Length: 288
Image 1: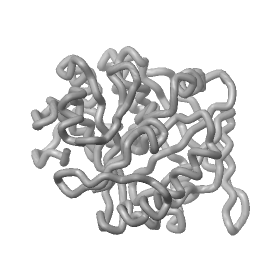
Image 2: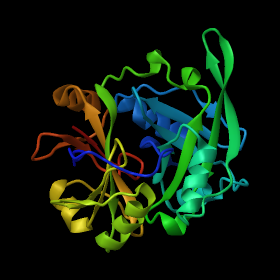
Image 3: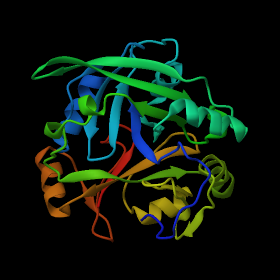
């Protein structure tokens, strides 16, 4: 599921690709243990002003977030309700240099984003406590089949992207792709074509949306099962964000790290290494 090589053109000047993805969970203690055993380096636990808690797995230009909402809090209802059904890949955060500018662009495209909201969390660093600050604007769930999509503007990148959190025993270096499973691939892909103002490209598994960096593949369940033989993907109602592909420097090292952590990785026909959703808190993770 590689990124298309064609030049991307879009009128979305403030939508810059994928910033991070969110794995929503019920038990953050158990989840952080699992992902550490996978060979990931996690950031210290964060406590948002909105009431949620997280750990992040940081890469050079993107990351994924392990998020727990301990109770049904205002503005966090989606994640709380999502995790009550089961852990899994709940959301995609898009990069933006200007959340208010993105709000204007998406409003002009009749996508009805929410008013931008600011929030923050304290971060414990060796030099003392600093504050990580963000501004987000969200799209309605009816506009992004498969999960929540929002835009995230970082005001304090130096606080979030720390070099000590970017070295991982499994040699992971970044997000490679996201797979959405859908019973109606064309209809689901059309929603993301509209969001990114692009035309989807045909791939063997379905349709691929060029986001500007990390692509989103919209696929049928049988097609993804063929791509990932023997890997349990998801029991969630479709469409759903079901698989997360991670770039690694060394697949053999990734497999060793996973086995050393007590996981049960499987080699795929293309040589990548997969951990099923049953072990990875509701999302299939593929290291390639």
